[in-house]
Length: 353
Ligand code: NAD
Ligand code: UFG
Image (cartoon, rainbow, N blue to C red; front, top):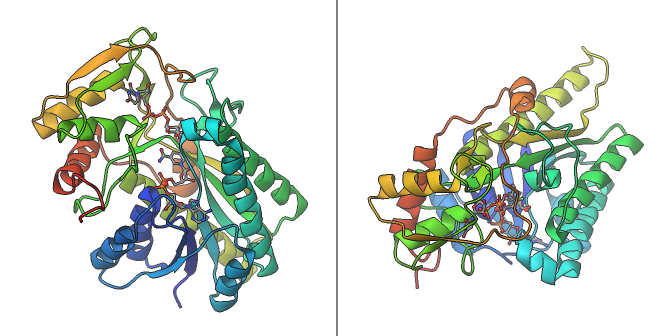
């Protein structure tokens, strides 16, 4: 029988790509999403891409009763927990919404998992938990600190997972700390579809490229980086999706070893792992790469630094390679090509009305 995974937030940007990767790797999936930041059309497109309907439940992770029904109906091996709100600026103006959704929601989910003895979870954490890093590349033992409610909510959940692991070694809890996910599925059928004017760099660039936005503002050109603009570790969303498959393969292997009794009982505990490429790319470098790939001019202007931004951020990727046998494969050119395909095929994202 196939291993079944509940994917919370599976209709979203990273979740939808991960559903395809999980299906291709032979996992059975059930998606649970309240569609607060996604579109049912993403689920339809994923179903078409994988050639079979996705089992989809419209629901909120704060809804204990509905979660109980879902866990009673399905025998899950574990959960991939993408569901959460992610806009840093909005989190500053609506902190209670962010703590309620991201922290209380996760507690509710964990409580129901415990009730049904489902104790394997892969949580979407973020490089934001490292704050302004003391040294580069950033490894998983680096100090954690956050300056905004969104980041605090990710850090709070990490602490909860750590405490849970310490209290009971039957939990296996992996926190994947994503660096900067960009790109789209190579088919061009699914991708990132921001609700409003994008906050993040890649969707902003691609909307300038299709003339939805006039020009990019580059926030600061006086950082001590290669060209004065910020440096980030951009990672293709399909590589990121494979990282989730690798994390679940790891959890499954561990559980098989324990069941076979050939090793001493081993608990994964709380395991934080970076998912990045290990390479930094500057804002200007990304703009040039996108312009080359798309053949479109990307008009830009330099403006002041954005409050809260750091100069440089890129991952140490050794732990993911060593433990999960995973590493990112795709280049900045691939990331730009796939973003451009999605953006030019669907300039209005999933809104095809
Ligand atoms: P997304 O907004 O596209 O996907 C999140 C999904 O969760 C959406 O489909 C949304 O409808 C759903 N959701 C939100 N609150 C929910 C709730 N209470 N109940 C049920 N569903 C709910 O975001 P994404 O970019 O795919 O990010 C996925 C996860 O990864 C998030 O937790 C995010 O914080 C984290 N993350 C994202 C990035 C990034 O740059 N995209 C970086 C680091 C971490
Ligand atoms: N930038 C611009 N102009 C824009 C948008 C961004 O110059 O219009 C610059 C930023 O100043 C930064 C770089 O592009 O130097 C990347 O900015 P993003 O907003 O795309 O990404 P961040 O690194 O600020 O943050 C993202 C997510 C966070 C997540 C973090 C680490 O938004 O939620 O990556 O994973 F925590």
